Image (spheres, rainbow, N blue to C red):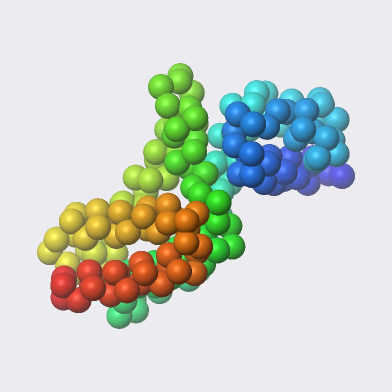
Length: 184
């Protein structure tokens, strides 16, 4: 296995395990075992568990934005609705058990590391994303609209664990249409 394949394998296994069991519920030995690599291989790529968590979050965030960008046509009539739909598909496929970034904020709050900053940065970037969409669509209330859509997506994510991604997304799309109609 090449060096980059081993690194990718470690990241993918760690992400899956962290998502299923939480950051505190998974040890490095379990990741090493399930990735089928030597202990030194892990430490050659990631000097600490915190570093591994940071890289997992960065990888997940990059995948989320790539997913959203491939789905949302910002020049369409309703990029806001497309963003909500894309987020719903993401939840169904990748995040059906809750939000990994919120878990990171909860687990690492107040600690002196980069993990919380990465997770909070993801949330801030979502807000900025909607502000940019609103600006591109010529909306006067871009900050309010961005806050409303960010709250809508965050609520959709939370409700997925209770009512499932399909139903949570259906409700959020209805709400998004109402928001868009009231800001036209």
